[in-house]
View 1 (tube, one colour):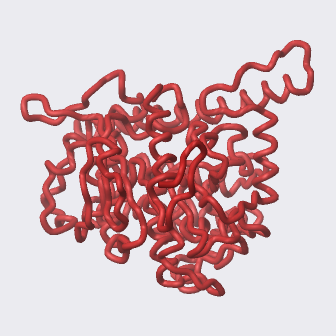
View 2 (cartoon, rainbow, N blue to C red):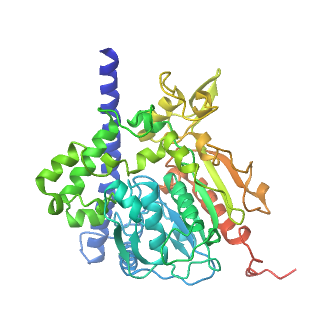
View 3 (cartoon, rainbow, N blue to C red):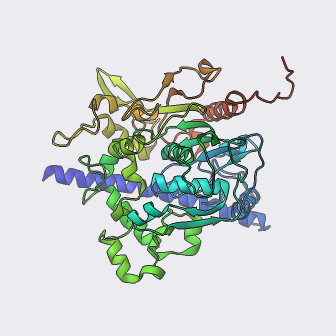
Length: 469
């Protein structure tokens, strides 16, 4: 009984912290948009303040939203850098003028920030990412759609954001959290020519940078409510069940202006009251239908078992450059792994950092993979285990090289995962630029410089103030 009560208390605290943070992000975006819109309209009581961290000027935000609606078309050279958000993330055009990557996209003129489903499966997000760039109507695939019970087709991009995308005009991807795994799945789909009407190949991807990437799953999913026994089912009482109920009601209500502001990405499941009525809501809440019933959502893909299943189909390709930044907020104290900082960890993540340090796989559950050890998974950043972020390692370890300094890997060699461990929690380099301080600029400047100067298949163009040798 005491353990049950303790679990309810922990659930209450976790739910409250996450709800408060979500409300803070949402209300900050709304308040900034209202304030800037009022100031721009010439209201004498308001003077336009400088944009808050992670926000852009209202005029720029309006232009970006219009660009997103119409489609910003980039030509062939230099290759664009595509920033892919993680779980609960959002792209350009959502949450008003707020930036998931805290304005990092402003560091280069040729950066795209797609808006993908924030809770949809890795597979579905990979399909969406392809059509966002190439153009056309999102095709989730005949077999996949039938198996998981949703419509085959989704959003229409009348004009792709990079329609010339091909082997001669490849792209750089930067994926945060689950976004990195989305890119890897898309890359495999390109290699397997999985998009009807398009002659794709693995050489469409020039580089992949993984920032706190979910490359091998995370033990946090089990604390949030996934069962460690199979990695796909949920506990009957857990944080994810509360999330499930909230998402179902949100999508069922289908309030247009609200969903335009933020969308979980389940439109292809047609959960709106207009489609299913009240009886459909009951079925969704009872778990008889919908993405949470079929398992076609993000959390099963982020368990260790789910990641192993995905990884077993993915390759590291010989002509693509790979670099990953693994984050951690833990250290050893008298041989015990503990949080390395109290003030340095975001309040939303501190409890999970502590819990993930102490994770022990249930003794009555089969090990997720051969050679699994609890101690390997103790270091973490509050959302992902550090071991998961360095490079693909289960079920087989991919070619990799640990680096201390970014310059240690120059000249870059394709087909190798260069990886670096940096101090920080899982959201240090997104949403709020001020938290990371100078580290923010050092990180993204390094990523963008590597894309522009060190990751290429042909001789790089001569930069200004440089002469050919």
